Amino acid sequence: MAEGSRPETGAQDDPREAANDGAGDGATAPREYRMDELAAAAGITVRTLRFYRERGLIPPPRREGRIAWYDDDHLARLRTIAALLERGHTLNGIADLTTAFESGRNVREVLALPAPSEEEPVRLTPEELADHFAGEVTAENLAAALDLGYLVTDGEEIIHISRRLLDVSAALVREGVPLAEVLKAGARVREHADALAALFTELLRAHTAEDDLGRLRPLAKSVVEAELSMALDRRLNPGKPGS
Image (tube, rainbow, N blue to C red):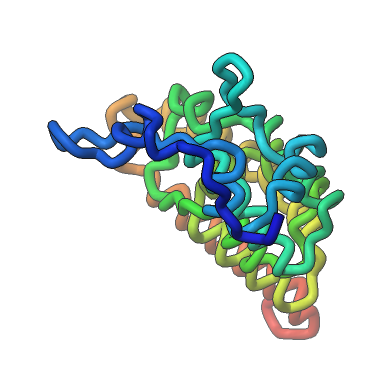
């Protein structure tokens, strides 16, 4: 079958096609595709689609008798695979990324956790994440970021919990620091940050009202930022007076 071809299957007479047209009450029904229709929409051959399905790169279709029905989530996954292939990832690498991606916590699992009050989350497609860390988005790094909670999944999208952390991590990678090392450092920083947060929380709870904790939070941050700045001075300028 020629790539991108769409053989006559009589699908236009299928009632799902009428629903997909969205005619009538204005409601948009979920789009469903037969195998050849999905392949055509994704710009690949049916043979390639079968190969991806056998490799587990796309989820199994919904079956109705002998007919397999695919949906827009399958199409989005195929487009992601194409984009990652263009960025130099191999099919084996994409399969590993898919496994890590699907084993990570999704956004519904973390909704019950307190959201960062000052950090702006960022929505990313897998290919946008690959663009931020060119050549560094491996299954191992993705799993580490998921374990740290830097990343959570939402359907076919990824959410990074902090724009600041995303930008700093990407900047360090551009400067030549391997992403794996950035993530290891992030885990160590997390430990120290948790200890500092515990110290200040205990201090403030011992001497102030509970309702004042949020109001006094900037003071704790200022102390940590000042001490970190002076510590960097001592490390980077050891001969400087006062360091």
